[in-house]
Length: 185
Image (cartoon, rainbow, N blue to C red; front, side, top):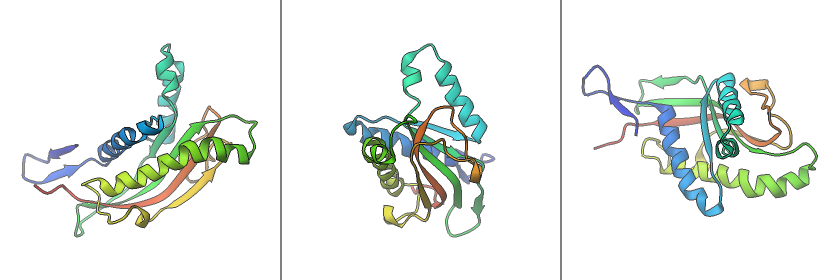
């Protein structure tokens, strides 16, 4: 957990990217039963692409093979402070992507990547959001956001997206609204 004292006082701060790390770590544990892993990355588009390229350039095949499924949290995002809880955040974009190819039909993509990988990862993400002690949420289906299935193409550049060097299928999540609190006790 990423809590730290601010100015040596009693006020604590919460690092949002670390909360997402906790969430993706919990997702990995749950997804292991489906033989799925997850690569969590965050930053601006270019920083995420650079991290993926470093993995691709690795001489270690295990590192190369661990690029996907990718869970990419796009930055920057604003943290609105001063309400009843610690902070409200609207995450502009999250991409869940899996390696694909450029020849499969949309029907084949939904059978191979969306139903077997992307939807299970997306559902587990919502479930772990609701379970996280730093997030104020009553039910995983009540999370305000927009979702876009993107079969068989690099994610578009609109809305702060990136063009992957690899051919991917993706679920794109836009404008995810979350309220964070400091854990009690």
